Every structure is written in structure tokens, then in C-alpha cells.
Length: 126
Length: 272
Image 1 (cartoon, rainbow over the protein chains, first blue to last red):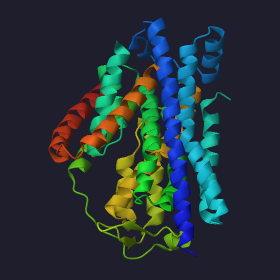
Image 2: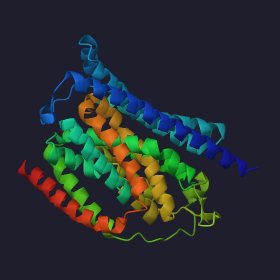
Image 3: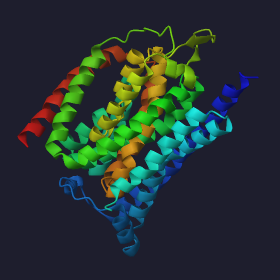
Image 4: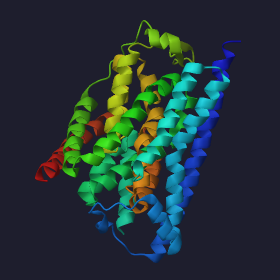
């Protein structure tokens, strides 16, 4: 009986990983769409990225909505999906460990999840 | 035009990386900064995105082979995410030229490590922490039999993960090389298990700082999108080509290239 638990856990974790793979495809779709839209509308080069001048994400999204820059919105959505995939994976893994009553590992996974969520706050000028 | 070239360069980077077992960061950051003149902070953020992409995309393959030790991964991830957050903080305060210099040192170390042969020295006894957390496990041998292994030096590995996380956030890399070092050396895991577990973990490590970079605006879609897509395509091709191309010969050439690139990065950093 005890051997079955790690086996079913492994299968569940495998399913989570396939879910991640689909997430990457979904993200790639939005990234590709955004890129295509940009190719048809703008001719910018990479030159203006020589200087570091970051625009906070919220501002960038606001501006894109106002100017109806769909390529930027699509690409940003693609990036958001991609960046959150590991966080989702950790969350699901924590749930799995909890279900298995693996308390130490669940606590660790929850800790990792919490750090990831809180890291978002670092990027915002509080 | 620029972005198309970027896509091509990223495909090449992903291809090489997959063939040689390196992460994207090693090629992406120097390529973006030296070839395309992109500011290193944008380059680092874009590189982290590609690390998340490849790790998430390939996670299923690593688990399927039953080589990845999920428990060890989660245990070590507690170290890497904390390190990543610290690394993000440090990166925000130091000047860009130091990032170039640090990156150069990282490349020099990578070149040395690439030449070193990994020795299989497996643990005989579990560390007490490993026993409590049930980190020890088995992996499939050549005939499909389950080979059991123990997990030593857990605390030391955790400390090493902290450092790996800091480097990941600072330089835009996955720190796979250092993770493998810690798992081979401190925990004394079988080589295949270290590699698989490390590749599985780097997505979370990169996410540790990528989220913050994203919110701050360091991730530019114009750069990150072609890079991420290119690296994914390239790794896929590289994985397929692995059986047909001799990685050893390429490795030697690549070490020379790394040393040249490292010198260029160092020069750029010292020039200020």
C-alpha cells in the first residue's frame, strides 16, 4: 500500500507538468500573435533598448489599452501566462503534498509559493 | 528585421544549449548585449523568461523518465527562491557594469566546469534531514530495474541553492550548473538524477525574480517574445540532434567561444 502513494503522486505531478506544457503553448500563441501584429504595424528596431528606462507594468498596460495597442497587450498576456506557470506548478504540488499528508514537503511548497507571490510586490514601487 | 535576427540567434542558442546541457542564459545575455546592443538589464530579464519557458515546457519529459526527485526539488527550491529575491534586490542596487563583470566570472567558471568530468560518487548514507523528509528514492537502471540511492549533505546543498538563486536573479541564468554541482557534490546523487532534478527546478528559480522584473517593466515583449520562442524551438531541435552530433567536439569549441565572450563581457564591464 505504501508503495502506491508515491506512484500515484508521481502520476499526478506528471499531469501537472503536461498542464505546464500546454501553458507554454498557450503563452507562445499570444506571444506569436502579438509579434505578428507588431510586424504589420511598426518598424521599430532594438536600438531604443540600449538605454535602461523601465516602464512599470501597470503603466504599460494602461497605455496599451488607451492607444489600443493590441500587439503589446497580446504579448504581455503571453508573458504573464509564461511567468506564472512555475508558481501555479508549485501551488498544485503543495496541494498534492497536503492531500498525501506529507506535511513537511507541503509546508515547503507553500513557503515557495508564498515567496513567489510576494516577490511580485518587489517589482512594484510601493 | 532586428527581431527576426534575434529569433534566429535564440534558436541557435537553444540548440547549442540543449546539445551541451547549458541553460539559455549563457548564450542569450551575451548575445543580446554584445551583438544587439541591448541594455544588460533588459537582457537579463528576457533571458529569465526563456529559462522559465524551457523549464516549464520540458518538465513533463524530466518527470516521465522517473529521474527527477520531486521531493529534493521542492526542498531545494525553498533555497533558490529566497536567493532569487535577494539577487533581485542586489541587482537593483548595483551598477550595470558590475553585472557585466560578474557575468564574465560566471562564464569563466562555466568554461572550467564544462571541461571537468563529472564523477559519479554516490551517497552511502542519508543525511538525517533526508531521512526525515524522505528524500531518498530510486531511479530506473539500464534494464529498467529500480536503483536505490541515498541523499547526503542536505543543509550544504540548501545553502548552495541560496547562492544559485542569487546568481540566477543577478545574471539572468538558470544556475543549472551550480545546482548540478550541489547535487552531485554535496548530496552525492546519481548524475542522471541531479541533471533531471536541476532542469526541473530552474523554472521556479527563474520565476523567483522574473515576476518582480516583469512588474517593474524590465521584461520587454519586443525582446523577450522572440527570445523565448527561439530558445524553445532551438532546444527542441537540439534534443533531436543529440544522437547525431558529437557533443564532445562541440563542447571543446564552445569552451573557447565562452572564454572569448567572457573576455568581451569583462572588457565591457571594466570600460564602464
